[in-house]
Length: 82
Image (cartoon, rainbow, N blue to C red; front, side, top):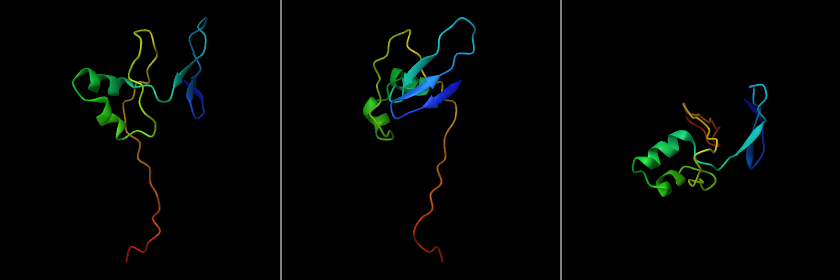
């Protein structure tokens, strides 16, 4: 479970007893991004849509965010739609 987020990390609260909490760099590749790279998509192509450059070099025991959805951000424009 995400406990808090700052500009560099997701801080995760581990709900499994006996295991410690951990943090994941915000710029680390997600599981879906890793899948795309493993299947031929260039990291530069993914970085076109990222606020920070995506870190694609991960170890086999590194934690990844398992992203299964999309985020829609709504913004109000400063013009009249008439």
